[in-house]
Length: 130
Image 1 (cartoon, helix red, strand yellow):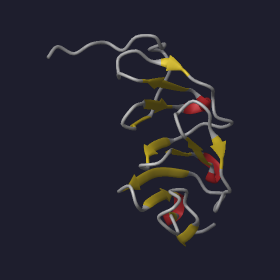
Image 2 (cartoon, rainbow, N blue to C red):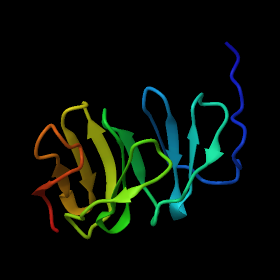
Image 3 (cartoon, rainbow, N blue to C red):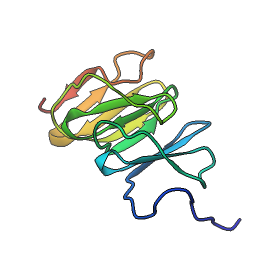
Image 4 (cartoon, rainbow, N blue to C red):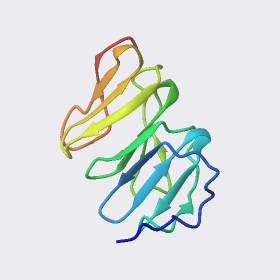
């Protein structure tokens, strides 16, 4: 299959991370910029989160985005984001999930984890400075 160029979103905007649910893909970048696509080809600018997201992941229930200053945000469809309580003031940089447990890694050895299987929002601080 031939590759196709994404359309509908400025190619001059830096995007740092992509995550997909069964129905939607999102791409996030600095300064709160992000885009949403249902097919991976046509992208639409979406409502910006209150702060920039470093990375995002699909947890099996919601999109989870993390960023500077301990920022944790969730979104059901990738368009409207809700800020969650911060467990640290350090920058968060990576997310790993298997659909049941979600881990978030950040500066200075910070590691956050879900506390149960009903929510994929990190609720426990496992290591590193707060």
